[in-house]
Length: 284
Ligand code: PEP
Image 1 (spheres, rainbow, N blue to C red):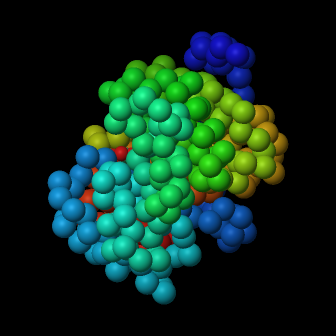
Image 2: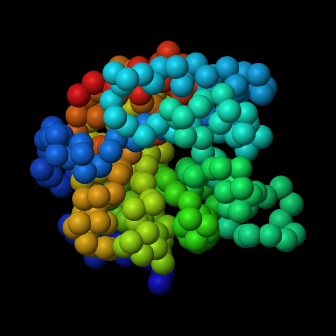
Image 3: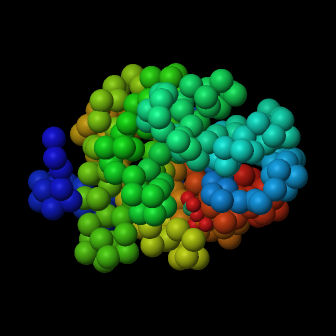
């Protein structure tokens, strides 16, 4: 089914990202239902294995018995995955920044789900805006990645989010609806337990312009209502939706207080163990 932004925007009047939502502070029950998930995306960093090993160890050391009961993951370049796993120990999960939707054959430079699985990777990103924009990955390709990861028994963090011009046209909810519907096509309600969503407005990634907690909460609530339409309320309520885009130690606490924000996907600040450690140890 072909879904354009305009079509979805016209037909899903209930998904305006900025419609009034049940804004509020997260309750203890919600915390239990959706375990917080703090994750870092190293992108094309660092430049050496030695630096990767040290950074993973330094970040791992920030997870203590006093830390919030969260899942913590680092998405790292393929070449550092095994070294980072050895260095991080049990307190962090090490994931891949992407995967090829093909399983084997003539795909030079590609890495398959089976290859990742064989070295113990449980999570991979799909749909990051840098992959969509710079590498031209389409919603169909991203859907292929999600399906292959699920088929392999792995987990996927599907990244979605609108551009600045879409945001300015109040199209955030419509863009997220298209990306969710296309990215998750063919994934069953049962398999949604192995999916996390990262809402990352493109205008906030790497720009220092973090979305306000109110804006992020509003789009997250919209995304949850889209998931309820696609699946059901129970599935929507159980799915973790992370916010990504210039999250810092200064912004994390207020973001994590929002009832529909279940975690953070962090780029720049995940390359600094002290900063990322403070994000892992968010306070609500
Ligand atoms: C990201 O790469 O997913 C990201 C959110 O980056 P940053 O935190 O640097 O904006």
